[in-house]
Image (tube, rainbow, N blue to C red; front, side, top):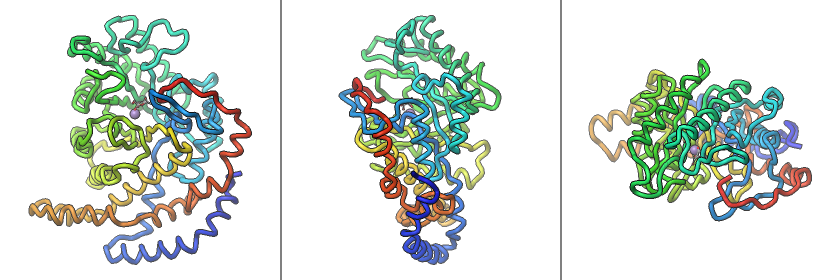
Length: 427
Ligand code: LRH
Ligand code: MN
């Protein structure tokens, strides 16, 4: 079992090498005026929420290949989420998706989560699939549909998410819609946005006190010609139109190739509407690959903007960090642990940027030294800091190795009958 004792035994073997690497890095950072223990403290305090749908194997429109020992319901998903947090210690928050995770008895699910040191982060509605027995189809849209009855159905679903979230102690709700068209002329582009806005305003009016509403934009897919909430500008316009507690959620994979996402982040920080993130990585489209696996420098540059805002105490700056990935060929637990670690790495490296020097080079238009200042932080191997932070918060020095050593997945294969091969689709 993945007990504290088991993790401690596994750490014992790795501790001498970690201690050596940590001390060596500590001396190097001290020469740069950085206290490594303060940095480890920051790493310990870092948090990113895990998507409940991330512990199941994902797929594509062509096929999905369920992995062994798949979770079959939200309770088994939380069991796997507990393993992730037990080993990396930075993922106690779980983001649920309704109706995929709709609990029969929310109080029971809340108790189950709390008993495992977990809590519920942002809720997510789903008006991009038709559920069995659903009265009206979302084939031609949901909150922006031309038929008021379909919009009503979509609004009611979002209101239900707020109710369930309230019972589970969540404090925010994320709306992503796939609404859009596949052909020129199919949608009236301005009226579609107006319909969306009227619908979201109704959801916003029911937003519980203290909650935030996140609007998630996406360039394309499932619509392949026009998407109603297609970019950050549209999302920002909607957030300011809907209300003060509405903000923009940036899913890294929802932009055209080569778009400067860190610049969008800087803009939304300046405009005071950066609500949060769905972190992942991509090479081409919305590939939902593991964060930091394809473009680690972009991830670092995004955290460079976030840490710069945090350190310059930008008013109201409090973005929500969540992963949103589709694990098609890996053990989802390993991918989630690795991705959470990659986010921690980018966060810690961003705290290594000599911001006074950077500002001086920026003000004096010295691009070479400005870039070098960023690269010096990005090329610092902070792995000992991340491992020490995990160790000091009761986690694993090497999460993946400890997880594999534990045989957890093998036990789940015995406990959980194989999931029948699913129809294609992301989840
Ligand atoms: C859409 C999206 C959205 C989710 C879904 C699982 O691509 O990023 O955040 O609801 O993936
Ligand atoms: Mn997303």
